[in-house]
Length: 147
Image (cartoon, rainbow, N blue to C red; front, side):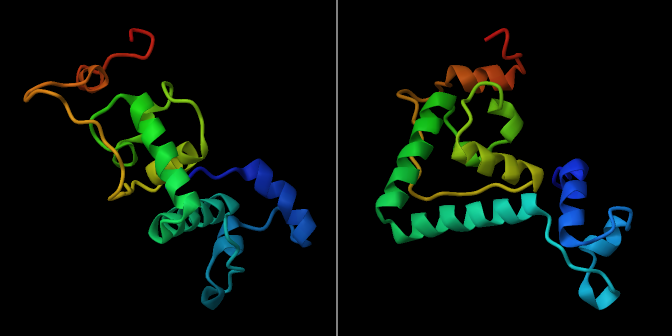
């Protein structure tokens, strides 16, 4: 589901006064089953990012509007006609510059989820039957070096 970073976690354990040789099932296991119920920090960070992202969009405050602008900018850079948060992270990974939204996209890809944003701008083709170049590249599975 998500990438586990054993080296980073092993460095954290001594700071928590825990033995680094204890099985991971004990560290992350449920309290009812005798585990310690530790959170993986990657999951915790992603949860907080998604909570902040959706919270600002629901409030429609100034930060929410800036998030929508950033999302529209990334959508424009992707030059795809389908919403960027509903596509696989790996389709545009090498073509888009890393931003805060790309870390959310990476988390969504690791969890096999998509996110629908109702106010997101998506380009529409000017004529019926038109397709964007990037959608054609994805359809024909072209490598980034070809494009």
